[in-house]
Image (cartoon, rainbow, N blue to C red; front, side, top):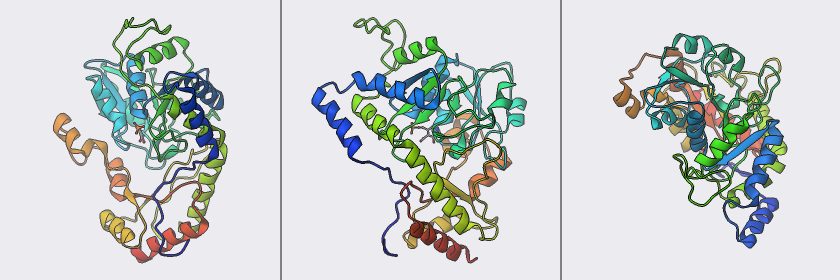
Length: 370
Ligand SMILES: Cc1ncc(COP(=O)(O)O)c(C=O)c1O
């Protein structure tokens, strides 16, 4: 790679195995609801170490079904974090529930359990913590609140929590996302893990228009959606699962190279280190700029040096829709707002070379003048 070649922000690892399994599906003629669906679900559940998994068409679809499955409906409140991708709040709105935000922990950047506890009312029916940027949320603390939990694990495949339990294996519905930038991709897709067999049955039915689990034709005994994941996508996912450990190791290696290359830039805040038994499922590499820098200006200056980067994430409660619908305003969640204003995602993917990491680091150092 020469100095002028563009570095992508994210890049999946796709090889011969993916082609082989997808061709198998094409040749079988069973492009959806075929054998690869169950195969992918069973392999994924076994990988996480949880009894059940249900494949769905996206992480968002999975979060929607999981919220319904724990009983969220009209007029309820769901406590979640304002520092996330917008989908984790939107899914509550789909059920005419209110997403209630609480501030984040300044170190892990995840929903702060004490702030969440303070936000509980008699209308709270669920907690929706997000394992942001692959760093496990404090589930032990959330479980103490005694409310149903839906884990947004869309960014956290490969993460292990403080109790040494893989994210997705605690038994609450946990939702993974397989969009193209994720640790494992099916292009679009998602997976819900659960320890509850009855919940798995409900999820499988609701993703398939409410059809009975035995697939009796047109016996739609409940409201459902078309949230199915095609067999083509499942075959891609199965092939990706076979190489998951290598891809996760690749991401962890790139993160270590970044930590080394960026560690000396004064005032730049790197992702928090793993403590105790915690392992981050590396998804993105997000840094917080020193106070006083124009974040968007830094993104533009990096782009001029052919380094793509992205503000990551803007605070959800300050997005126009949330301001207008729910009356949110600046200053409500100061920790989140400070982090959101200073954070950018740098190029990050398993096969990123040390040379590419160094180029990003040198460019950032030059742009920051440090
Ligand atoms: C934290 C979080 N929640 C939810 C989603 C939604 O997943 P999807 O894009 O697969 O619908 C994403 C992903 O993009 C995410 O990062």
